[in-house]
Length: 302
Image (cartoon, rainbow, N blue to C red; front, side, top):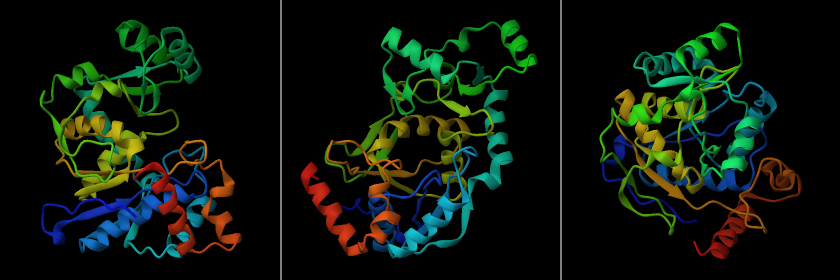
């Protein structure tokens, strides 16, 4: 399997992680991502951490977390204990997000997903890391209207005001891309967070979102090298903005290829046939999976 390049600092200070979400069973694409991150850590005598990103309390289930741990051990992975579970740190994320709110960099958004999708179809909005870019509807609400809706208890999320945020970060903000995907530029990459728009920082029923919690955790866990799929490459741009706003050091990034099915679509947790649980029951071995991964990558020219 193709691997990320080696880091530029000494191996003893290198830390990476694998961070699945227990919203379903792991599939072949997860196995590849986990192996790439683990092999990177092994090759560089680095610390390898496992993080469970379980902030979505409506979709995350204990059975899926148990299956994740079982599957990763079956794949031959070991990690440094304890495992970090994001659900155990929700007040901490809220504190960091409140720091941005205190600087006037966030605003409440009352738009439903349905409303955003309808606006997207009408205005042909570009697609960002979370779907159609939010058009900023609630950013333009008056303070009076916002206060009235909050007092009424209207459901809302908290969004980053990207325009204001960019006024507080350097115009030449970059990140170091050392990935193995042939289609991505290597080296210092200039950040273009406009492809993400006003991302959600906190969702209904949770004090945080993926973007906020992953940036905070990578900082708190001392992650020096983020090894993940190219499907998250566009999110890296907005993550660098959040790191800068919070005063965090930037890790190096290694974006690798993403496995796809016969129709060219990324594997999904909804596809039970490609889950590791199903393949184990069918008699597949980790060696079989590695052969399938190599064939998948070869078909993509990776």
